[in-house]
Image (cartoon, rainbow, N blue to C red; front, side):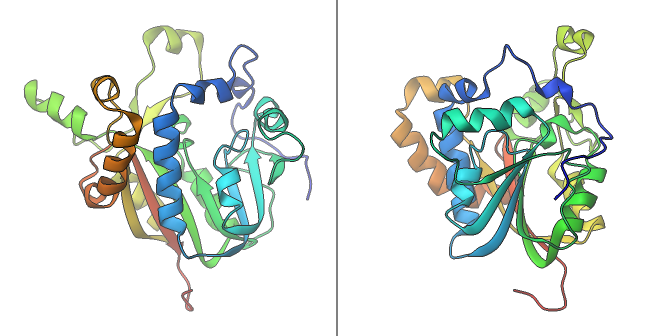
Amino acid sequence: MSSSIGRARKTDIYNDPSFDYSKFWEDRSYEHEAEAIAVRRLLQGQRFRTAVDIGGGYGRLGAILADYADQVTVADPSTQQLGLAEQVFPGRPPFGRYLTDAAHLGFPDASADLVTMVRVLHHLPDPEPEFAELARILRPGGYAVIEVANSVHAVRRFRGLLRRGSVSGDAPVDIRSEESRRRGSAPYVNHHPKAILRQLAAVGLRPREVLSVSNLRHPLAKALLPQSAMLAIERATQGPLGPLYFGPSIFFLMQKSSSRQR
């Protein structure tokens, strides 16, 4: 597998020496556990030969995929993130690491049985090239777990009602601060889940399951409820709230079209 890969996007913005992504998650244990619950729920009962975690950083979720796949590769454009895996997983990370751009993965066609893309669409205002590449490396009948930073979550819809406005537009919503925009920081957008589903359909992926994730991601909930209670509620609500696009994070289990379904 070649490590010399052309890049269509600027990727050095993901190597910020002042930002430790593992420490970022130390204060977000509820969100991490909620996402882990979602991934395990979507993959329950499955076993895969090969899995690729696109934009997987230091392997936060790649380590979970190792419970479901014989071979896991975390693919990320950041040398900083991939190097951090050695600190987070002393000895040897339970996955391979590969430096690459999500739009130019470098894996052979139809070489992955499972592909995941979590917390990546936040940074992709126009993810069509990445979706095309994801579909290229996924075998017919293979599965993909796609997380969408939801632009029409319940809190935003409620605020829209109070302002007598609408939040139904399909265009990505840039949620960076004005200062971040002036600095030229990495794109940070939310997407309408229906718009993402249309883009995934265009590359031959169809939804099999949808979950609403991090449903209690609000300062008030964190202040009032112990995390054990929050996670119990999370487990009970991810499925029922999924089709409503309730939470700030929507997880789709997609399957690549095939004449022989798995």
